[in-house]
Amino acid sequence: MDLAPYIETLLEERNFVILPGFGAFEPGAYLGIGINENGELLPPKRAVSFNPHLSNDDSVLAKVIASKELLEVDDVKAKLKVLVFEWKSTLNKEGALVVAGLGRFEKANGLIQLITEASQLKLGSFGLPAVAPPSKKEPFIKEDAQPVQKEVEQPEVEKAEEHKPSKKGEVKPEVVEVEVSSPSFAYQLAIVLAVLAVLSVGYFFYSQLKGVDLSNLI
Image (cartoon, rainbow, N blue to C red; front, side, top):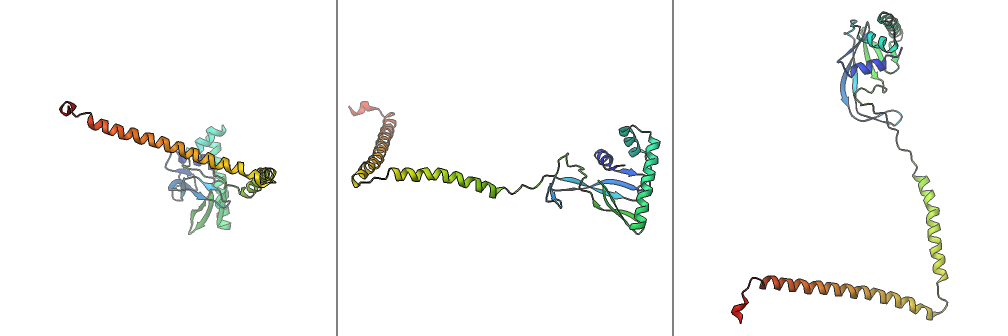
């Protein structure tokens, strides 16, 4: 019987979930983003703690399992009792017990303790899954990009060689085009700036003389 989903769901609504005869699971401290052994990013969640002193049967866990699996509450309680007996037997023999979805339990000084919480528990993580680390695809991108660059650059070289003049006299038109196009743009820009300057000065004097009474000057 997989108890982790039921315990996880109940801890979202309750302060503790009792496994009769074994102990109680309680919500612990909030944990930030972490990384597991596989390098995956784990979302923020709330840790789960274990209280071995709280083990009285309150029938809450049994009722939830019975409603989900369409069983009688008494039948679920009987299954939980057998499961707890097996867990305790393993702890007494080996001193440790790993439960899928819950974590690693150890028994010391007669008390059961939750040593390592299972990473599958997503209490307080809002259902966010673990995020796999980004794969390293940069070498493949660079290799794909290099042929494209060569294809683009190669025609430019070929064109340059095709238009390369065989005689010295053919160089002059190209030089003239560059020299003419550049001053023409500078000349147009100078005219625009000059016009803007004249308009600015004219507006300045107009604004200054606007409030002056010119009748006194006649």
